[in-house]
Image 1 (tube, rainbow, N blue to C red):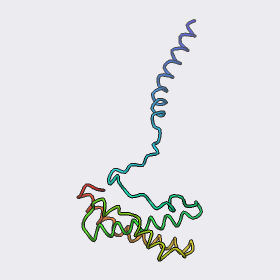
Image 2 (cartoon, rainbow, N blue to C red; image 1 turned 120 degrees about the vertical axis):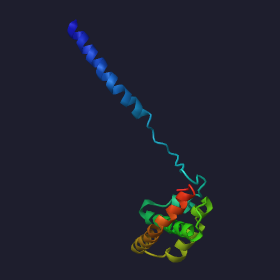
Image 3 (cartoon, rainbow, N blue to C red; image 1 turned 60 degrees about the horizontal axis):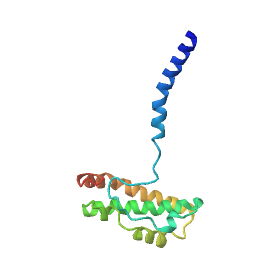
Image 4 (tube, rainbow, N blue to C red; image 1 turned 180 degrees about the vertical axis):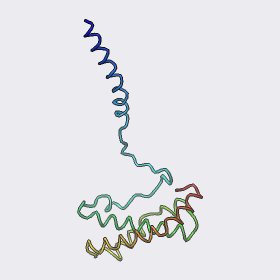
Length: 137
């Protein structure tokens, strides 16, 4: 009987220590909503980008890189970080992609992505300072 009480006591202690983490883990359900901290009314990517085949994802990445570089350029050029400046429609980036890169092969698109990324990264510190001052970073 005494052995049984000791076992039940230990079982209770162990379950008591395990239960809170197990309950907490259940509450950490990921949300499918992607609501940004700033400029929550951002324009959606063009439909073709959202529905692109995985093997062609580099095309989507290139348009995203063009968009990001343009955003950094606009912020630095205007000295403004309002939502319309930082997150305009995707039309200009999509147009640049179609005009300059649509017929390129995968390797050329990856090189172009690298170029746009470098441009955006060069401007990022200046753009970030402007946006942080506006409370929009």
